[in-house]
Length: 92
Image (cartoon, rainbow, N blue to C red; front, top):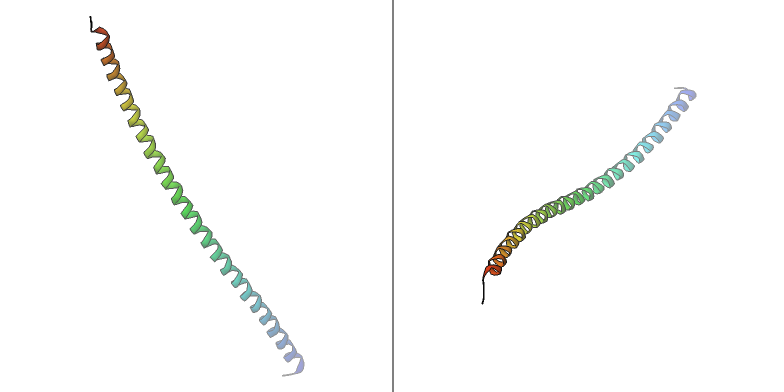
């Protein structure tokens, strides 16, 4: 081969090696970004689970509140009926 062709091949190989190094670095950065995003996703899933549990607790508390209010209403009615009966009794 003549010198010009050898120099051209050397230049192309140099460019290829530079591009390979750049791609290798880009791959490393992308892998790091993927790990970071996976970690962030785990955190968000944990937060979603925590919020879901909290929402279930709120619904449970709402149901308990409803039951207690109904019980309070029933107790109030019973007490009012007893008081009316007591008012009607003549203790003299």
